[in-house]
Image 1 (cartoon, rainbow, N blue to C red):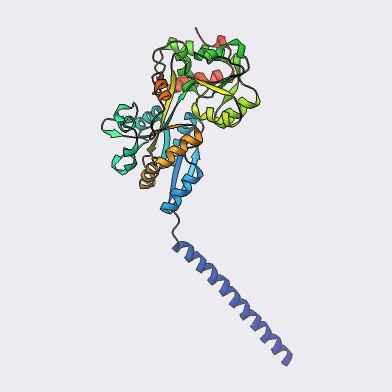
Image 2 (cartoon, helix red, strand yellow):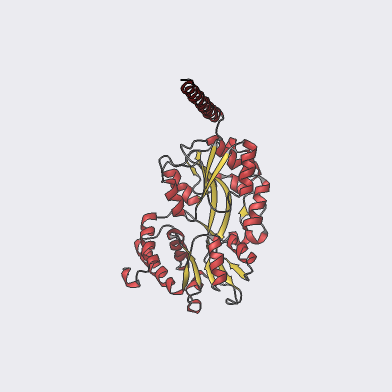
Length: 366
């Protein structure tokens, strides 16, 4: 009987001990849960941009100054940007970077919020041309401004000096049979149709008639004979150009690509064709319905800091809207054709899909 009672007491003590341990574990769990719920999660700014527009040190400085988190999504084409902006309703971003033609498209689609320009004091440091928003097509609709200029570049011809001894005078150099298999082209419906239209002598490359559209499509099919391949990102183009000893490239990213190629050891030149070169002006805009418009204004204002403008030019080889232009760039600007909204993005995209996939020349009606 005594042994039985002792065993019962031992079992009771063990049971109580287990209860105590369980209570401690449960208490710790609830304490952690309450602590987590009491600690506010950092506010998140969601940025949609191109490579080189949201460098890690810029993001870190922004996060540290405002005690927030920045989530950056990068795109490699206007088509990818459009798809991202339509991946949810409302779009899952607060601020984006896009060229003037796309800004006009997004504003017309009701995807952008009108800007309070007084909330961006660093605009005062921009050159006068870029402060006069109503003078830049695509940025103003009625009395509302939808974007702030950030950076720009021409879209000229990049050439290997060893294979192309004299700077090309025309975009038609891309079709020269001497460069068969040595040409790189940017994978984009809109820009390819526009630069080919310029090469064919059409005065308005953004609003093509049906006959002009067919002629341009056939010209782009012919270009495939000279192509090494298409590219999307500037880093990809650099690797392809160097590894495969390309001779010519349509420089969608312009001087940014020239800078990357020279850093990679390539001896390249850059030419603005006589018929003119397309040029893009990328701007920051605030997404309509975004969760943090105040942070979006802070982001745009920081992007207009003189230090960031200087770093953008130094790192990417891109012009900024703050520092004075070199005289050479000013002369070239007279031959630049700022991109605009085109007559039909869907028709160009459908035709480009056929061209890129390798449809034969006879499949395009004369």
